[in-house]
Length: 373
Ligand SMILES: [Zn+2]
Image (cartoon, rainbow, N blue to C red; front, side):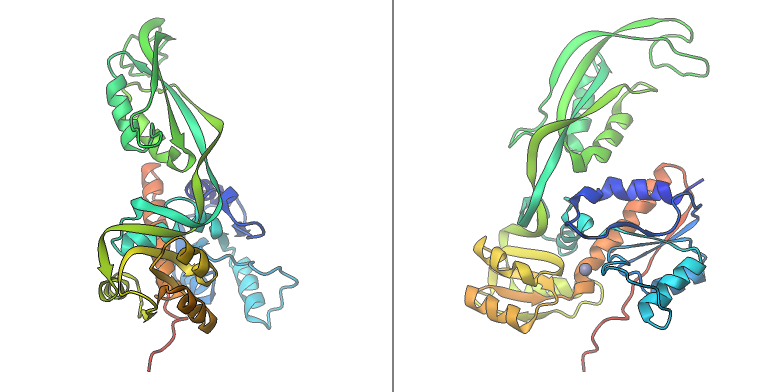
């Protein structure tokens, strides 16, 4: 049975709550961790439209980027829109879960997905506003001798074994593994009920916390044993910086026209607005899904020539003018929708891998978009 608790575990694998900014109320906003789930709505906002969709599709859960209780709750007054929504969700037994700044900050999160949608080389990016450092893990796995190269290749392809500019980093020690296959097993080596002694390699390597699901899945796929013996150790070492916004260095410069066109063509509902201070051809592009106004100065100081985000205000324009930074306002919703669409693909994949048939429906809202006249 698929429960809210199980879905939370998938979401926390993707965007651990520990990445969230202090005071950001991420996690289960409303509901019962033990409740059974058959249909899930994914929406940028926990709003009336999401509740309506949940009712239409008989969905028991809504997953959002923006939290339901962003402001401290002081009451549930049904004569106010926020109170009416909370009351309706409780009455209809809707479970609401939000991954907000943790999903902004985690590597591969909202801004990374924005960069991918714009066909920018996000792999070659650095964080604009640093909020912490990623954790590192050590993986130790026991491999039958002769299979260590295959396993190392699979682990490396999934992101493990990277130290600076060196890939495939591992340490390998030979030894003897023992096991006795039980009833109903299909052992790669040995027979049921007989103690086996096998020459094995203890293969150890390093990986980023955010890569652990991909690395372990790659290990389980590549390892020949039915039951794979492995350990994951937390390390007291600092990994790469994590935070808000990405600064991307381009191999080939991009023009303002091309960047505007990509925003328009690739981002849902996007009608980009722009203001150029400085050049119109860029080698360094800053991105931030949502509202990036507070990052204008840091982005410019780090060498950005253009900043694509949403919600820029008049004073942001004045600030950028002084710094010689071009701005493209591609809209809050439009710059965050690639992250929401990624959540949909991620969750569908995890459910399918684990054999769950629950339906996931992504809500494409355009209710809160300005009308251009
Ligand atoms: Zn947002």
